[in-house]
Image 1: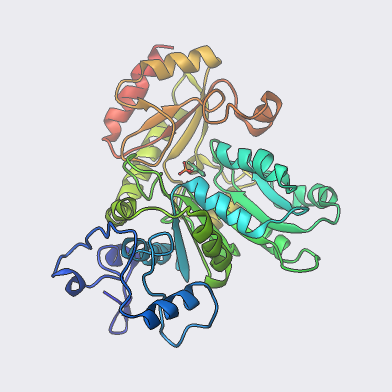
Image 2: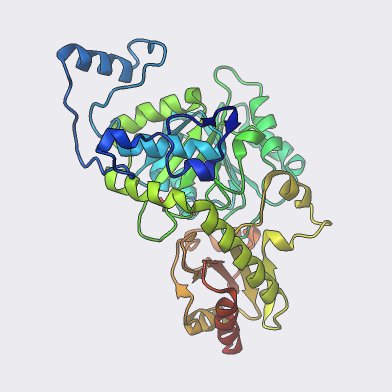
Length: 421
Ligand SMILES: *Cc1c(COP(=O)(O)O)cnc(C)c1O
């Protein structure tokens, strides 16, 4: 289907996932798009090549309804264009870009906007790779990260944050909510309103949200003032632990500098991975819904288990929590990431992890199979001990990405591993 409409009825993303942007008549009637495993595309004429380049390089404005022609797979490719069209649907975005990894999406987006002397404001905790990119890679280019803690009302941290900015230009704000691994929340609207009203010369800060944990099904940051939504598509979007990819969505204007830099860094994804993601998008809502239902059973079971001290799960937030209102406003479900502390420390957490049988001991998340890991010594090992303590990453903390298995089997495996402590 080329359009999102059925007469006056607007089709939903789960229906469009199988067809949007593709016509079988383009490919011998094939119901699925073939893989366009090609590096380059033949121009019909020299003039056509000239027209494609002048548009791709922004040397002229597009004519009404003109789309960029296919040139070379670092710039565009049919599989990536189909995927990008379909990625706009859930977030109701104007435009989307796909990348070779989540880090390629995050790195390319930040480099497209930040310049030496600028500040990038960020929430904490962040995914370990993003934290490293801000504190080690960007810092070497003279770009300063300034952080604030997730899980607290933004009004509480605003004053200290502004003092730390000391009049420097804020190029971007990078928010991760819910945060990895503790499911702490950030009030998207409060931060976006603050960032967009900062009194500074030149462009206003670009508000970027890493939506990997709940999106694109259960959280839509563009509705709460975000400019760019970032994904590690390796996780729920890919969903089968068999590919590495990334994406970003937003307005055409917000994505134009990122698309430009992607062309020159070559951080786009490839046709085969793009094709795999097209297939994955067809089952995205089903998978994320099944995983979320399982996670509720898992979290409830853990919360009542005598060997468990504390469970971090959005579905267990109570009304007296300062983040409860934020949760109700911006999250459509609690998702399927659960973190919990066993009674004891590293030895007890390791005993539990080593005794699991069906749930696999591995980092990453969002796939069909359940995975468990130890953030303090694995995904978040890079974070100094004092900061880990501040962020709630204790030696007893275990993170579980809940898959689509039968919940009774998940409970049985968790139970026998907890018994071993
Ligand atoms: C995994 C992850 C990333 C990095 O994505 P890659 O695809 O591994 O590069 C970024 N943010 C979050 C929240 C993640 O979980």
